[in-house]
Length: 339
Image 1 (cartoon, rainbow, N blue to C red):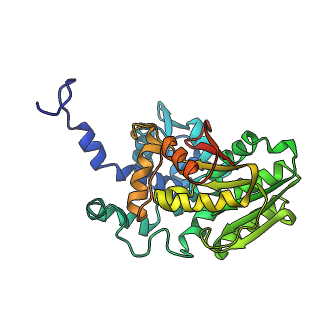
Image 2: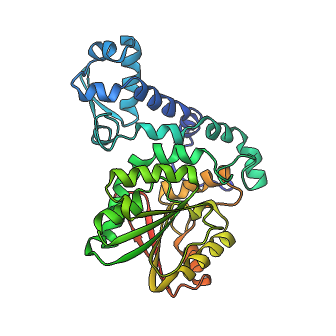
Image 3: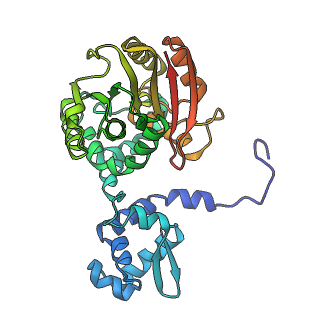
């Protein structure tokens, strides 16, 4: 067979599973709305016990729970359901790492609608939506800041430790497109001698200020409202945090931004990029590699860039060297450029 690999006999399984993949999204959403994971964590483990707690039918709960077992969110022994370790940490509403609220951003109706036009998007090579993610002061970023913060708590802590913020050096920190602000707030919390200047749209900065106040670093948390491409940063920064931002833009725009950041840094200072970084083959690891499709659908020219591509951007922007660090157990990587 021309163009086909030699292997097991062909099967329609992958086609069938992919055509029905939307069911996984809706089953997860339903389980969160029914507080199913929380109910199981409370000790209700059979469909008969879960049904009244979730205000649902026994039959409906049984079928939903079995579906979630098949898809890795629950385990089953006899007629009893239990949470997996991930579900216990991330889907019990009582957990400080609860992620259920992130669905409000990840599955926003406008976002879901975008993928119904994917054929047209692929033909064009970018989003076909007039109100896309880069529209100035798009309210979607307020939803992002509020809904996605719990998902970013762990990587924010890991990044602060990677940067050795606890060393207490006197840092002037620039943070671009901060959203919820958890990354720069983590740096400020670990380092009592760090002062942060946070850049984002005014409506988003309100959320970051709230989080800075809760973390007890508001006195050292300053804001610069506006577009990161347009506002004046000031000078003599020791550290610049650019978290999950560059992937929204084409390489030329990324280089322009990095050039602006480089001019605002002290000699020897670092620009820290936290990103989805696929391998050079662009098909692994799965989450960074498939993130490119999200950028294709939602932006005019964004992409998930490889480390080699980030190296080239940083070099063209005046940085002397760059390095790549994984951030396990997350699916992010950290690229550090030194001036």
